[in-house]
Image (tube, rainbow over all chains, first blue to last red; front, top):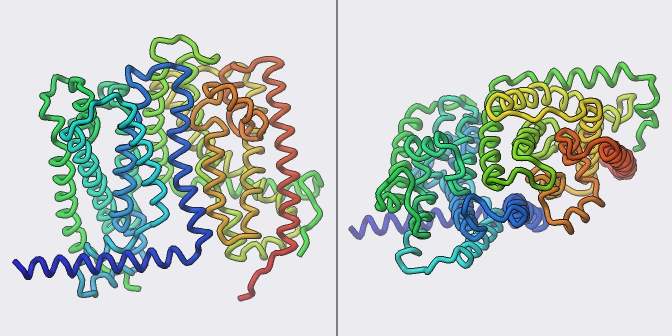
Amino acid sequence: MADLVGGARHHLRLYRRLIGAQIRSQLVYRFAFVLDAAAAALITGTEFVAFALVLPRFGGFNGWSLGEVALLYGMAELAFVLMDLVFGGFDAPTISTHVRTGSFDTFLLRPVPLPLQIFGSDFALRRVTRVALAASILAYGVAGAGVDWTAGAVLLLAASVLGMIAFFGGLFVVGGTLTFWTVDSVEAMNVLTYGGRTLISFPMDIYGTWLRRTFTYLIPAAFLSYFPVLHVLGRPLPDGLPRWAAFLPLVIGPLLLAAAFAFWRVGVRRYHGAGS
Amino acid sequence: MTTGAKTLGGGINAALYLHGARLAFRRQFAYPAATFWGLTTNLFFGALRVAVILALFGARPQVAGFTAQGAITYTGLTQAFLSAFAMFGWYDLMRTIHRGEVATELLRPHSFLGFWMAQDAGRAAAQFLLRGCTILALYALIWGLQRPASPGLLAVSMLFAWACGFAFRFWVNCAAFWSADAVGIGRFAWAWMGLACGFLMPLAFFPPWLQRVLACTPFPSMMNTMVEVWLGVRTGAGAVQGIAVQAAWTVALLALARLTLARGLRRLEVAGG
């Protein structure tokens, strides 16, 4: 047991050192860093601001207030950008570059667990501004959604954010693994990752039945944040689903992540160097 | 280093510029798989945008001169012109400056700005045919499209929307002559352009004070005016006036780009190798 704890502590220290090295290197060019960080936030910010600016002219959004939409939007954005920070190394373009140039071999040669190295290989510190922005959108939602916040509601939404991190992280791992076969990143995955993130940023009752059902039963994205938020707002779930269906984000996200890592192991066994 | 004084208007090299445009046009057809997946992503995001717009409209027949069908058409136009107008950014010129390839180009006996413009025209035309027309056709099949109110005026407005956007993109890329961080400056510019040109939401839906501010900038000329001409929100004299504003901004921004380019080239240093 002590051995296991010691091993975990060792790995955590390694991860911190890998991340720390990247943070230091990214901070060398201060002006470039500040510029990139501000631009990253502006891109996300303008999208939500555009929506918030036009909403008053229409007065409503299928029965959702701006605060309620901000809750969904902020949670999805917060989870996605945190996931991007943690799982950035698994993103298909990153792995694709390693596969093409053969630098993936370097990871395989080092006496450190492979996933740990990949986790520590791409940490874009400039995204912290997006974390802050997403947190402020979420804070606006928390204050403006008119919810009587109980410990249970807070826990449910925290679980929802964790579930989304695991879910989208799993999609990143799948997309990265596919490049062991395809070398180039598979662009269809973008519809699931970036498309999925945008899709669950809005209440899913605005979509047509087939789109909503596809992203509920085929790709279980609705369970991640839409159902938990419906529950917290005291609204019924669609399709006559039972209330407990709102409590599944921490089941669905980690399940997908586990399956993704199983696929990753298959892909790594399949990998052969580029010969460079 | 100084630029050649020849401009597009010289007419001597028209065939050369046409050839540059044609090559850039053909280059866009090199990756059919990427085009296919780009289209799929475009269409998926289009579906999401249609849903958001329809949810905003609810039961309202008309808002700010837009019908619900017009608003659907608007989302189709943004998805269709996204790549032709390079809404997510354009870094080609700054890349050649940072890599020093710009030195080779300066040796060629043609207008630097003119040749880049010709190449971008070819690129935009190909993207419009490949992705724009396909998206519009798919939109017409799935959600229905509003027909352009006056095709003649629309064609002119579309041309100026591209030219005005190109001049702005070129000018932003010139930052690379001064700064190694031009990519970051570019990201800033494109994010702002997306909001201010009516790519994220039609400008007519914004609060009046913001519309007044944006009307003083060149950004609406890069997309919003064209959309309003297509939808018939601007007709007759209003459309002509909008196009005149587009033309004026295009000329002004091209002049600014040319001036900036000339100053940038004066301080350009390329390491040999």
